[in-house]
Image 1: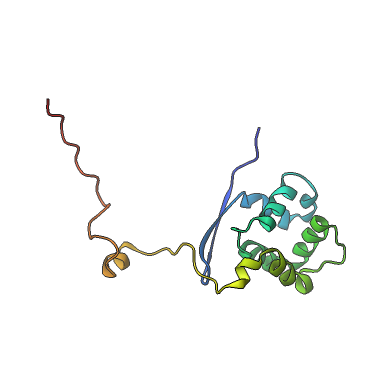
Image 2: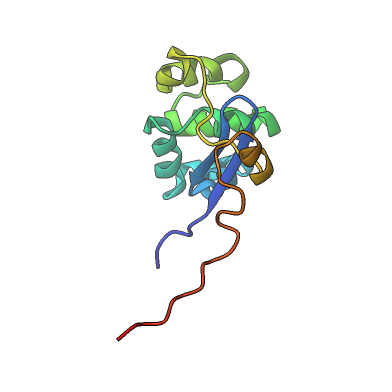
Length: 139
């Protein structure tokens, strides 16, 4: 049996909407830091740190909920007992997620209503609301 597939959706007012695969595993580890020593939790958190497409947002959000647990997760994950999120977290993110700090953040996905899109001319009014009727075959 494989790993459970979960996705997290985080809306950040600067970065926009982000989707994160296997977010449930990461969130569980931040709720119970001892899980960070076991697979697949360890592999998934490491993957988030290494993956250049994963923003710092999930780490910040989870650490804001409980900085002590975030400290413990990274102490175990990095094998650095002296790591403390409040003192070391931002430096870790800047080192591992440098591309996100090199340029001003731009949203990757922005939820916009159809009315706003129609108003700004990006969508033809009425498009996509109904499927066109199928035409019968002509022999």
